Amino acid sequence: MRCHLKNLFLLATGLLILTRVYIYMQKAESGSLKVSQTWTWDKETWMEDIKDHYLHFNVSIKVLAGVFQQSKKYLTVGLSSVEREKGSYLQDTLQSIYSASSEEELDQMVVVVLLADFDVSWIQQTLEKITNEFHTRLSKGQLLVIHANEDNYPPLTGLKRNFNDASDRVSFRSKQNVDYSYLLHFSSNLSQYYVMLEDDVSCSKNFLSSMREHIHSMSNSKWVTLEFSKLGYIGKLYQCRDLPILARFLYNFYQEMPCDFLLSHFHRLLMQDKFIRFHPSLFQHMGTYSSFKGTFNQLKDEDFVEGVADNPPADISTNIEIYQTNTVDKAYSQGLEYFWGVSPIGPENYILVVFHEPVLISRVQIHTGLDGKDELVYADVELGKTLVKKESEVECSGFDKLGSLQQGQFNEPAVQKLVPATVACLRIRVTAAQPSWVVVRKIQVWTVKDGQTM
Image (tube, rainbow, N blue to C red; front, top):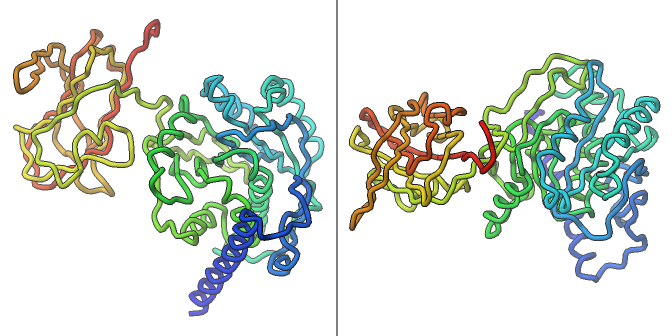
């Protein structure tokens, strides 16, 4: 009962904070509020008459390297880094961000790295490594390195031991919340969107373009958080207009719970009651040892794909009965929606993808089922070489089998070794009856580009 009342109190407090700050921001935007202080990186930006409701938040953030751009970018990539007992992944993470992006994408992006350790010698060494390796990105305003001194932080010892965590663990995760609060606070005016990463992450090819497509698909929906990885707080995307509130939220509840827990509460408080996660994941955890005491950590996101599917132009058809508006083309579109087929489903059923032009395929992935239900249990995946167009339909023939679905999933990363020639179509052929309905979430096809070798 006491725990229940405590949770209700925390929820009510969070709602009060968010409501007061939201009202303040709306007044500021409308011009009806006179703000005595202009926005600077090292000044408090909140109204005097509501400061009493918050912990002290007058943080001074130093820019150690990089130059500000006059115009806002499309995306800020934010990450915080501390010294690790066993190696560092920060430079590998930065290299992955830049190598996975085109120059056009980089012109729309700024990466902000908070060096959050209190060891001055580590900061100096790390800063030197970054400036040596990424001097071009720094000079172009595509990378900013920042730091907040220890005296800016609230108490980090003697904190509440929620979840029965050891005191050193509580101190670590509480400081991490403050780190991210300062990082968000600094980044709130740099771009239109902000994505949160860790300092041991690898990125999918052209992740910014993929995110832009997904953001566009949500243009008619209200959202607070979009997720591009299922791991912790990796790949969580926010609108920068929400960052001041989120920064304050993490700061005020910094000792209550880990950051990923707080982030899940945040979008619910702002009336996004469900997770909105896109497939495949665009970011992968690559670290082997945790930043907390160097403990072994082999956490991986099984939904990560290094290169987002090409899905060349095609016509998609099926003879499985469609449920309502969940048409089969949605499985190929790489959007939020999916194909939903009605039972009975048997060996006479198929899904056919007919490419507009012959393609040389390098990889095929198929994801079926939703929340452990409605998987396509028995089916083969085949590629057809010959296309015959008739008056009312198109027939494909000359099929080679790539393999079978396993537990509703299929992944063949070396298609060209099995079928080295161009193909006209892809077919998912049901091989046995199943009583349940079927959901096909993703049909993903990667092609071999001109001049590319496999």
